[in-house]
Length: 414
Image (tube, rainbow, N blue to C red; front, top):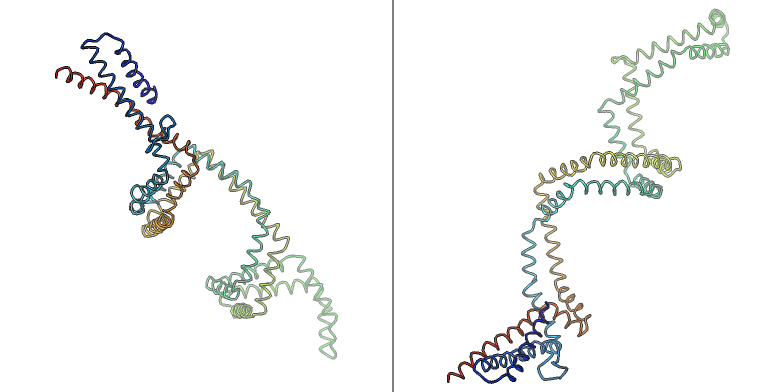
């Protein structure tokens, strides 16, 4: 039963009881009950008037000092705002509370509980796979090409190339490059078709030589003695023998070639025009349609691999996701200075935010109250505190009844 109905019933009981006692023959019991009901009726009416006067004019009569809440609406609102800003939610108490919170620890604990649930991990992996599938890589391609080209334009290629050359020389890559080139040349020269080509080329060139006298006769005799096969075999063996000599680590020719390679590399690195030409070529190459197609294909491959890994982990219950999170959490826990620094930054930011926006609590309360008309405000207050106030009416009627009995007894005695 609602407290409002109960209060009304208690008042009606007192009024009905008083009327009935007026109709009964006088005796001590009737006088006692009449005195109790009379006092209870007076107390109930008085308390009904007092409670009603808080919210509205009793019976619609504009009696002075009634409808107190509406008459003092602005004062009540300001008092409520002041209490919130200065007592209940003052800046100092909020800041002190914030200083005692370990935000990163709290966030990690919440995230750990969240990721500890298999359903949550499955949802994350589902959303991640769905998002990866929706990423328009073709739209991101122009930005990627532009970013790479801008990086090449701004980059100090001379410094990069110089460091690269020094690293290659330190790692002995110049020697490896020479050995690789010599090995490839030896493999090409060793081919039968190469031998045939060398013989044919040598024979045609020897036939073009014009010498007179004894040297001419000797040379013509030599040319007539050898054929293309013999010349090819001779040149092939000579070239392969020279290559084997250059492959030997103690070869004088090898040292000379390596030295020339190094000089050529440093000359290339220090040639500003060539480096500028290389930079321009790299920019054009990065912006070329072929490069765009290559990058797009690689991006699609990366996306496909990512989606496959997400689906595999989903089939395994998200174990890799949780393992990756746990590894990251353990690694972060070791960086105590980093944690303290960011805890301080978060705390300072929140305290600064509270200090700059604390007044908005009062503004928000006032705005919400200003949006309510008088009827809505009274209805809200009656809903929140009216229940307890209605019990005042009930207590007034009951207490009045008891006091009435006592006073009637005293009247009868004296």
